[in-house]
Image (cartoon, rainbow, N blue to C red):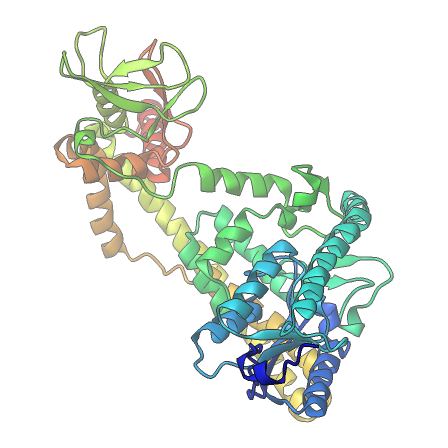
Length: 527
């Protein structure tokens, strides 16, 4: 019989590495804002602390502690912070504690890849608290990988059940998620018990009333940076990007959209801040021309590029050069035959530039009517000044009333007669009205001397605008084009005519006054 005793010293044994690292980290997560307040995060944290204490681990860091969807891993700020911290830290923990694997992730195969990288490259394991299973054994690692796939399957099954219901909910005119800025959201699912309602109700709040004023400012032609400043002065924190997003959000005119509906547009149940007509008009303003333009070297010969439009389809004409002839043209890329030469070749083939110069010249005031136009403008200024004085009296009276109301409100709050909620509500309303009053009455009285100096310069510009355009560089030409015709010009190459959908108010006004002056001169026996 074989005796192995003498061969024992030649036997090969499996190396056993004793892990002495007893430090662990923890990651907690809930899926929604509502769950954040139902003690789930606290329960997860307490479970991790209790598990670490019972198993002899030292819990040194906790990540998460907020609501983050487990569907997409790298859109989760706290989850990403956890992974980055694991990579960069020198004193890596033995493991990350998670209450249950679906708290770690619900992305299935992607999360398995993240887990394997954490174990194989970083040397950090995952321990599921609820089962005690750890990835430090092959069987444990396989089981937790299986649970990650199962979590993804749960997500898919939930979507199959919930998506049809969400679509029906949206088609009924309701809103999913947090209501946009300017609205209170009441409904069955809300963390604020004061806003609980059996049915969804989205109403305009105090901020919404101020945003309503912003839409009016935009309609009146105010630039975004001015509107941002006005809103911030009213206590509404607004950035240019947020404001730009608001202009394009149809929710504000009572229309709801959602990716679940795949392009379908629904009439919402909520109160609109602005009418559909105003919303569409403002978006026409925003899309009328792109956010700036690039001027290449060769565009010096075609300054109207980007400012003249096809009379048929409304597209901007593009410019091109026929090298053999050395001639520049403007052309519509869509409509056949809509092409016009940039400069005149013959009397019949008058170019786009000469047509534009003639158009600018048409706004000149006849020399014999200049004094009459000035006199009429002066009368308009006098009427405006008289109106300003009357409005100023009313303004001062109303402002005094509001300031008195504000003092009374502050006194009542200081004496404890009203609570802070009511104080804030009425204080914002009073401050808003005071600001609006001051905004509307910031137009100074036009002095005679200032008016005469400005008027002479303006008349000179109108009388010579064609010459300024002809002699100016590409940038001057562009400025003049967009000053006089802010919406661009439509051109019909067949009858060689421009159509002007919008003309600068001053040019239009002086042109109309010139015609009125001519009628006055013809009909008045005193002139």
